[in-house]
Length: 456
Image 1 (spheres, rainbow, N blue to C red):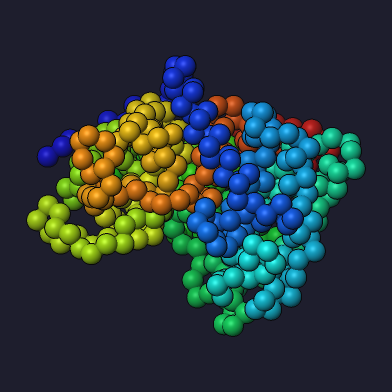
Image 2: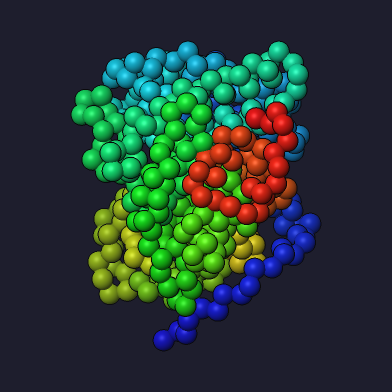
């Protein structure tokens, strides 16, 4: 039996080699290009996936807005072009139908999860989604924090972002017992479940608590954190969540280093350190590989939400293994069908580069896949073999087709936070975000710094 994992103390990242810099730049630029290629420039809506006929995802729009400052700073897009794209997006949402009808765009300041790319109206009878609206608002606030020039267009953008944020009625979606629901449908009302257990909803709560117009009550955050589950896995103490994306999404915008809420003060930890520990738990699970999948190793790991093979059961390690298609895979309790998520590993770079870089290098070169496609696609699985030869060694494992906007957004933002901390710096100056974090009992670190007067 393998002994408990040894978790090294956090240390400053080693300087990157020229080859690593080139690899990260290529991956980040390719991910940024997703938003250039899959955006309706008339209304700023962005396709959920690169597959033909995809509807727009409001969460992906939030990532696209946040990626624009990165593209400008890296020289991948002109400031004027990025500003035009962001303005088109905010103007669309400002004028969108908020009646809540089945063919509208949203209600109470929130928006339906998926929208038709052309009309911007509800698609697939989907729900008004709180978390996806929060991701969209995070993008709007990021754009407002970046475009600070005293020009008519940039002034308009900041005013639109403020208007759209202020009109969200967070109380509408808060139950009497202080829990916040997941969403609402015009046909049936509020969904029957709320947020329980640690999740990406920490961004939602921060934005909801910071609202100057219709904020969540302070009790809502405590009601949520009371459902947290602190565990010890492989000798590592951490706030449990199985899929990697949960430990990443809110970190794309919020710098949790050194700031703690009531829960983390009691644990003598913070959410950034917790994500570092979760990253090590993921690698340790792959090393132990309890279900005997092909390919799992110390430099090949990463279970998260993403696409997987939808194939008949196959015999793996003496059992008939099912495959789940798109699923939120996690460790150690599953589901796990042998599918690993390359983008989620790359998005962990900021937390533990010492173990992430070796894994990304392997995925980047795995099977002679050009341009690191396996890192950018939603999932790959070496247990399920395809009939397409990848090199002289024979058939390659299953690789998802196309790209998902959420994956590409996380690559752009999290790699940039690792390289320069740009998104974190921008959002530290966001008045509503700081207010929300304070109301959620966060203290210390950069939150103790005085905010420059007039910051967005």
